[in-house]
Length: 218
Image (spheres, helix red, strand yellow):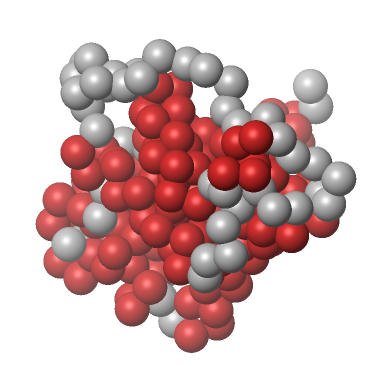
């Protein structure tokens, strides 16, 4: 590894460390109550050192939100135009992928998205909203794809998409890894719960249904 590559790797590691600590502090104290000095103290450095990686506190918030949205969208982006796929399998994959990202972040970051957008500068807010819109468009396309094939009921795809994404996102508020339910089991439960609400009798008859797994009991 060249010296330049090594320096870049160290820089990326430090940025990720700052972002992780910032998420915790923003939730613990509230974004507006956290200063760059607070962040520097948590990172064990001087405030001036933070400016080597981020220009402002707002840019830290923006990068934290952008990083999570990228991890949510990237694995499912191919489903936006995947007309030949099975919408049931696609819906399962979206839920499972989204949930794994959502619950991989520290529980302390659970309300960051709830309060963050209003604290972003307009250009950065537009970026996050655009990414969120991309996610919404992907899941709606999958739902509409199922409707066209007679697998899903002719319901409001926008409303269904919002309900499913809300179930996934809000699970970080109450989910406990040691609570007797694994992330995979929770993903399967949310998927089955959602499917029961939108699947047609014809869809079941055609065999467009989930492969059986254990029912989650809490």
